[in-house]
View 1 (cartoon, helix red, strand yellow):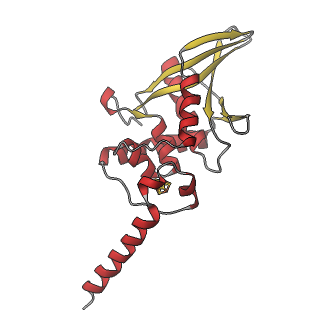
View 2: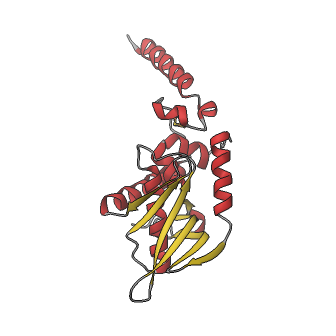
View 3: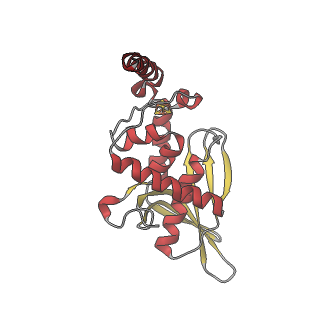
Length: 213
Ligand code: SF4
């Protein structure tokens, strides 16, 4: 499954996480370039800027690379990993283990896992390696959650990449659907899901009335 093989067809790995959270959010950020910084996104940005400084350190049998550039031509993705640990194996080889830092706490949906799995798929393609696991680190709970890249998560990640590519290539932003997740969305004030949804239902009602014989 190849979504993009040329540099200009690559989309940001973060688009997958945005798409999993809400396709409209993905379109607002990656098509309309809307980005509203609030306290949460500012904290997240500062956290990422810190871990995105490119550097390397070693701790025993673990080598740690920060701010690793990533790319998958197969899935048409480009981005950066906060941290890639390399764990020394008994045969002397080094097994990559991506770690992504998140400001908040573990989410009910898979959007963070999909983003991490996409990073692993990029590393596998770049290093011709097989990567079975990675981890998400949540700043609010200071909790490290190990994530297994099983077949189900890989399929979900590939499907999300396909859909995000389609959405961004279409250039069309889907209408809002107000849900509980909207209250934690940094784009709530730009998106106005309740207002637009109400306007759309009034418009649909009027259209139906006018079409009735
Ligand atoms: S406010 Fe809701 S509908 Fe709008 S982008 Fe955010 S999650 Fe999606």
